[in-house]
View (cartoon, rainbow, N blue to C red):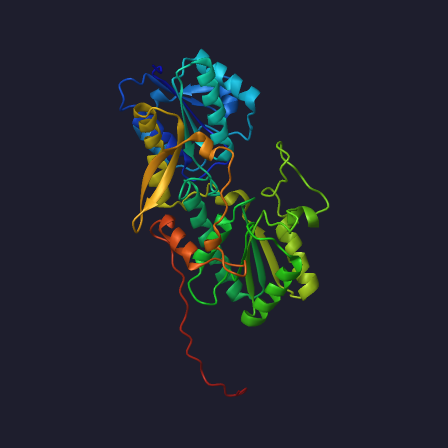
Length: 405
């Protein structure tokens, strides 16, 4: 029989709604008399190793609700990627503190951590229920229709490109916006939801699911610029050539890598600058601008999908229910049904851990430079209510006197 102590932690990149899941765990746990304490680890698994934990049982409901509506990870996060040895140390701490339920809110790496800790507990014969709670703006967890955090980030991207398009229409030129997404292009593809009129940008969308060719890119920009007199482009930070090499590494002289050996793509504006330079040099377009959205899209205050908030809360609540009433460890998954409604399932940890979902072929157009109606229909209900709308003047031309046509 598991003890009545819960430990919850947050890992990986923050999102606008990850604290909804945290609040969901704490508040739902209070409904079960068997639960004595709810602890939180500061800065993810590193906080567990360091025994840097706080008693969330003492938090007021009012403050938990306020924190739930605040973006970023309230407990703090970490980029530590635990191996087997690291996870054994995690288990030692959980056992020493007599933790009976372990909840980890995070993405791919976090699900794998939960899997390894679960196996360690089973080997030791220790009664520990381990539940992974999904979170990632990349939308790349397998087994779920979508992942909490993605809809709010997608809402930001759609609105940001809608604004960039308005700016570009006023002062025409070429504009490039680089969006997060190392392997999956869902977030970059969300830029398409910012379009209203047929000639609105982004006119071109490049995702890591398709190989990137500089020659074809320049030809696409040239054709679009000739057609509209301007060109707005959305680009995933993880675009790569046919060999799999990231374009950022091919064009940049200096490459920065993180602790896991991954090329740093989000903390630099190099890709946008390099693509802009190619356009200026090869196409002779004078007004060329580029932005890197970087970390802005992850925890942007005031740009949150109400659908995302609700579902992020519910995955936290369902995690506790699965832990208390279920007979196995697992990862909470969102399943879509009907016109738009969702239900929740508990998937085996091995079905999710360490795997990466990419955009389905049906979501990407034949040319690889845009999305299909299937993707628009998939994403639209996730963005929530109250999206701002753009409008145009209805021009009524006045006849020229001095310079007649």
